[in-house]
Image 1: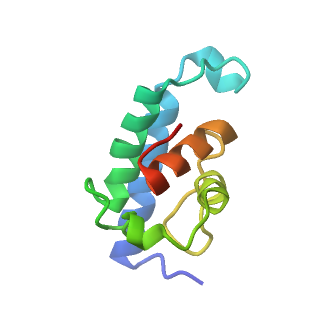
Image 2: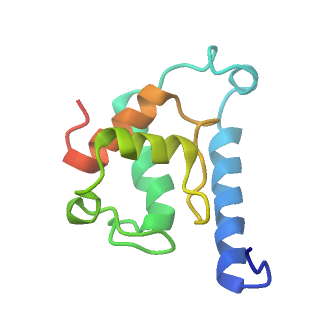
Length: 121
């Protein structure tokens, strides 16, 4: 079980909550009710999300921080499908939250390709 008095865990939970609220609150009200109504994000928007939202935990240069490093050598053993699943469902027992409520499976796959290869297409 987790010791919620641990300041690092508390900071991780607070940061994750703020990030998710920030991202979710940026959607139009109609998109918050249905992912089918949310306009698709373009490549620029997805890249900014990876750089800012992922970077806020994994380091702005992806060298690590609260989250583990996301440099190519650190994620080499993960497939794109593995990374997509981690983005969508999070990693239980860690500070990595699920993003399924915020990104679509296609967007998560784009992010995984971007992280893995630098070329999301």
